[in-house]
Length: 226
Image 1 (cartoon, one colour):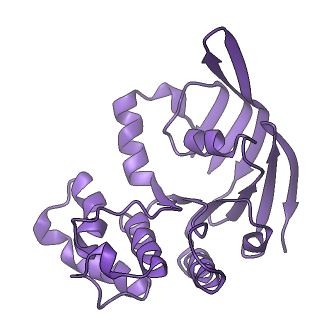
Image 2 (cartoon, rainbow, N blue to C red; image 1 turned 180 degrees about the horizontal axis):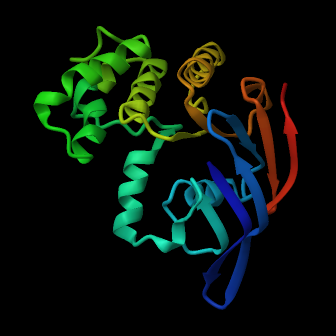
Image 3 (cartoon, rainbow, N blue to C red; image 1 turned 60 degrees about the vertical axis):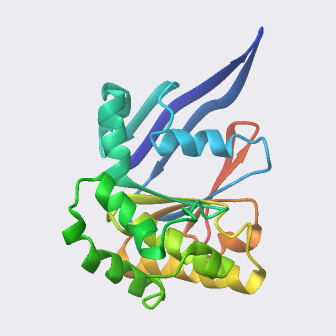
């Protein structure tokens, strides 16, 4: 589904040029659960922005479902991103003044769904993440684990081709982290959702199928987890 070939990424800082990604090559197949792991400054975030269609200024080739993404205009790429990628972040990124229902509904509205058509789908994904009774609550009325479940529900509401989860357990205690990772694993195994997990925590890798290890902008290791 995702294929990167000889990807190089540079940033210009005044008179200095930083080589952030160096000859990156790998594939992610449909229905895989892949961990991307590396220390701070390793290039993980840059790599994820590229995979998630946020950044298309790079050298090399990125094929998504056999189509070269640099062939698309910014508008086309934005539409592909909205339909194809679900994002889950460490800090949840929920809108505090919106209810749980409204937070999850937003991606549907962005993609052109009518307000009258969203209720059943929002309730369906809330049930899937174990929060069927929380639709009318506000984020601040929920625990951290519950807020992350809302973020996961929001990420899957449009049935994306893949989810990017960027340190999704970074702000959670160990027990809640296990619950969230189990939810991701269930979505992957039972729903066939492709998941790319960005983490620096080795314990989270055990839930994945494959590990891609990044250091100083280079893929230094790829291994099957189980």
